Length: 277
Image 1 (cartoon, rainbow, N blue to C red):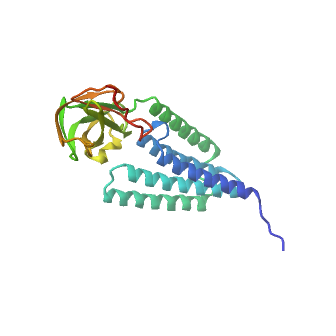
Image 2: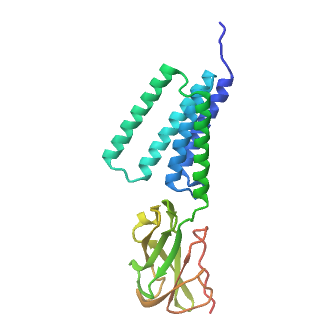
Image 3: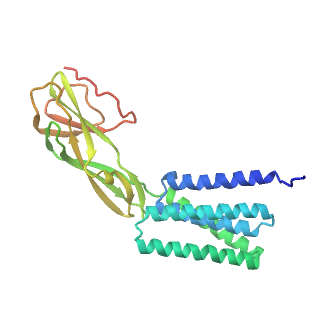
């Protein structure tokens, strides 16, 4: 029995699957620091372009794979948009209902008419979508990214095993579109006596504010707190009126009465240097 199998279907299928994977990756990762709005628009334009190409190509098998890629990209667009923007349950229902009617309508149009667009309209729509896609990407890429500013209190009382508020991290977005932000992580240290240094945890009071989406032309503040698990073998449990100083790292020289706060390095467990008397 002869089996009529076109091996190019494997290539078409692999291309479609990789296209879907690329769409999912694009939705999950913050590529080029793009705004969530730009990423959502990119996915919708990609869905539109895949559908138009699938409808305009005479090769039926390739057209089917492009339809599949178009539908999958729309699903990724839908999930990304709903999960990244504050949609109410009513709005989610409306969006899903609209999407259902959209695909039913597209399927009916393809069934009845075959090619929806003439060659002239096809080229015009594709040109408009391409211009819109690249102009939005360029506009977003050259836009400002969020800026983080650490502001600390002048002093803090540090008690063993107790978290104490020590300041705020201000997140500023000067760009007109929303931005994803991911606040820096910090560490701290202080010298209770000349031969000892104690590492201090620096964390956000509300961990949900350490990353997220900030609206365009707006700012947020995330409180930070300091925490020392134990004061080694010292006969103290509290240190009062520690001056807070922002630095690049924990100093190697002894400095009594100062809590140093510095941005965490990529190596999360790098050792705090021992003091030099």
